[in-house]
Image 1 (cartoon, rainbow, N blue to C red):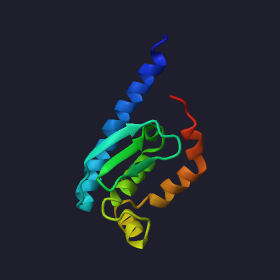
Image 2: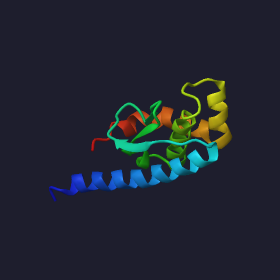
Image 3: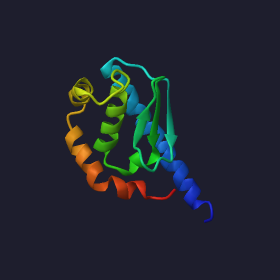
Length: 120
């Protein structure tokens, strides 16, 4: 019993790595970009990030959100591989590849803080 919380978190992180990795491969191919690696972290204020070197970092909590939210966050971060800003060209690329971006952003605005508060 004492190991149950740790085992649950380990499971969620493995699930996050698999789902985020699959989405990253799909969006990288569709957008014609590459990335160096993916890290799954215990982020409490960000859903994801992308470094100029191509390192992607995602919150494991994304697997607790609807699938379209996880999908949108990956598309958003992958678009940063082409545009390291949030300018018009960036948003055009996101919307070109993720038609449900507005719905996902609305879900994040409404529910994101409560999911970020979930303790590991």
